[in-house]
Structures are given as structure tokens and as C-alpha cells.
Image (cartoon, rainbow, N blue to C red; front, side, top):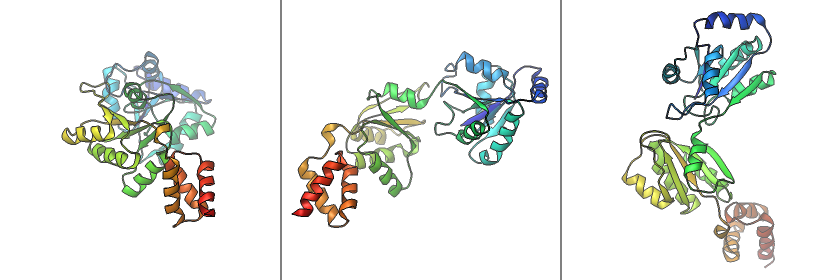
Length: 298
């Protein structure tokens, strides 16, 4: 969720006018904000939010609580999914005339499953300097507490809601040898865990919930165990779902590959059958292709 903020001092309006009249390119600051605990904000972020000309927010009321807590009176502008197409060129024009803007999210790092990517891309294309101010992120916080491998991970944002699209998305990720991370709303968590179990198998997983807040928790176990837990105890608050990637032992053996290929080749061309089986087998495409040639020869 995103917000663009203005100067927090009494002479804020006067300085804004001076910066615009001075001309020259402005600067866009991409500022991370807390995901729960208001103490999780950097000193640099606070100073920037106080000194810029304006701040654009997805929900100015939500951002207003954070700004009020720190005594920041910078002007806020609404910037969200429904108006970013129309607002982006207006903001870029202001940047080109020298305005300093801070792009913030209602919670966490902007652009990560939040509006803002359009503005950053447009500003960069216009030659405006884009400066990141790193900080809180539910994704990274979830990874650090999940007790799953972190050397390689894939972030999928929010999974599709429609069953067919969800199945296709998970099929494409099934053989990825990296920890899978997704955001999920509490009312959809049980259905998502069920789909993950159905399409990925009973893998080790974790659900980081209410991160940095009073009821923070991170149950860990297999997908079936987590499914049973959250079915019995419906969750509240936003969740980060983390699932172990495909392991070497999860790959199909030769007999399973042959069985899958026989079935696929009865329905598809050899090329299509190889692609289908490779996607779910955890084996290299060349290995699957060689076994398909052998079966076709027989």
C-alpha cells in the first residue's frame, strides 16, 4: 500500500513552493514503513518523511496514524490501484519540476504486492532519481522465522483465487528447488493450504502471522498439519505462507517417469508429453526426453 508525503515543518508550504520555483529534477524516495510495530522504522526514513515536499498513500488514514505518532505533518496524497494510472503522470510532472516525493506503503516495503511499480518505472524513464530507503518487509521477516532454507526463495505474492488458475500456478512451481513464499488473507488461508497440499504434496511449511504484532506466531510442520491446525483455529491477521521447495528425493524415479509418459503420450504429441512430465517430475528435460524416445521406439 502506498503513500506520497510532504514537509512536516510549519514552513512546509513555503519550502515546497521554493523547490518548485527553483526548477530542476526532483527525487522519488521509496520508503519502507512498519508492518505492525511502529518502532520498526529507520531514523533515515523519519528524517526523509519530514523533509520531503509530499507523500502519496494508498489510504491516507492508515498512513496518517504512523505520521501522527511521529509528529510528521507532511502533506499526503492518495495513490492506489484505482487511481495510479491517472495519478502517475501528474506526479512525474511534479518530480520533473523539482518536487521531492516519498513513496510509502501502509505496511512494509512499497511495490511488494502493493501499488507503486508504475510510478517508479515512469519516474526512472523520465530520468528522475529513485532512492530506496530499506526497512520492514513481511516477506523477509517471514523467511527469517520460518526455519526453511533461505539461500534461494521464490515470492509469488497472492496466489490466484480461481481453482484452474491456482492449479496452473502451483504446477509451474512444483519442481522449483527454492522455498516458496506467498501472502494470504486469513479467510483464504485454509483453502490455500488445501491447494498447496493437493498440488505440491505434504511438504514442510510454515505460516507467519501477525508479524511484529501482539499475537505474532509462526506454526511450523507439514502442510497437512498446518491445514488441520488452522481448520480448528481460524486465523486472524495477514499471513505469509512459506513452503519448502522441491527436494532431490521428491523427483520421480524411472518407473514413475515411464508411467507418466505413457499416459501423456496417449493424449499428446511426444514434445507436449515431455513438457508435461518434465514440469511435474523434478527431472531434467533431457532425461525425460530420452525415456520418451525409448518408449516411442517400443
